[in-house]
Image (cartoon, rainbow, N blue to C red; front, side, top):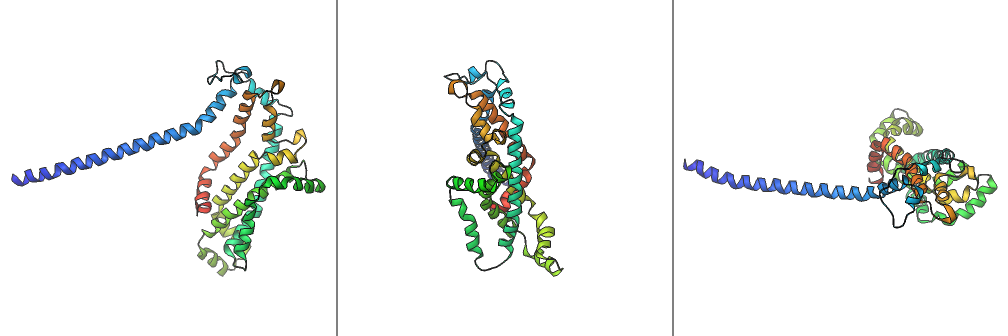
Length: 299
């Protein structure tokens, strides 16, 4: 009887301590959850306000002080975006064409470059890698004027290819960096086994490494698309025909209302429409993007 009482006396404090620890863990979880909800709310607030402004009437969207909730739902701003000048589909088609060419150029150039820098040993390799990364330190805005003169002489001004080359140049340093790290993350035993079987370097790249670096290639494509889709200054300089404008240029043009005032409703409607392709592509390729980013850029 005495032993049972002693054991119960020992178990009670232990259970109390375990319950206290469990309570502290729950409190921490609630705190982390509340913090996550707060961060999500802060991040989504601008999008929510933009959407609310886009469904207001033009007069209500420009009202000062602003009214956050619309008194009535109006799709007038979206109608204006679809019918603005050459039409939304023309500008979206231009942006998609430029982004597609940019993605193709980045993959065609970054994949072999990353493979060579990761798998071949030659003198000055690290210096060459630093040279390829050096453009990140140069503001591309300073180079647009001479580039435009060169492209105009070559007949690439007002063309999707010319603008895509600029966007690809902007994205290539990071793309090469990411692809190099992606290739370095693959065990060398796979390459050695393929070489012993008689495979050439190109066959190793195509048959062995290609499928393994798909997440990295998808990450490169996503970054190239977002960079090209959102880039404004180069598109403004290189595209001087209305039918060749991209979506960012359209957004700047559509914001001008009567007597030079800013048409906030139309501008926010254009913003909401412009983010749809980026969100869709990210959602569809999220699995590959996260895997490629973790295995490559944060290696």
